[in-house]
Image (cartoon, one colour):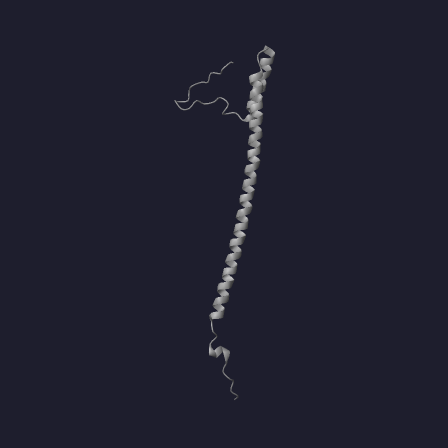
Amino acid sequence: MQQLKLPSHNNGTYPQKSTDSFTIPQQKERLENLLYQKVQQGEDISPCIEALYYLASKQTTQDQLQVMWAEVIKERSAFNSLQRVIITAFAILGMIAFLNGAFRSVKPSAAVVNPPAVQPH
């Protein structure tokens, strides 16, 4: 099996894969080009086919994860909205109860209950 030699100009850090800078569709395109070259040269194409299958399954997995993440975000958004509505409702009910209690505890003064009689002139 043929192994690719990677350039080692990464300043002593972890080895960098040559495919890290390419997206999956770009990687698939490069592999397909390599596959056609190997077919034309009569070389073994099984590693290229395996890599294409891997990239296809990786893309499918990423798509599924993106869909699941979108669903999680929607659920969180719905939960946060519901939570705000409930908190607002309880705050309004609390204010109503407080104001109701405050107005009930205030006793009207005698002057308001029995206004002075009007004396005829």
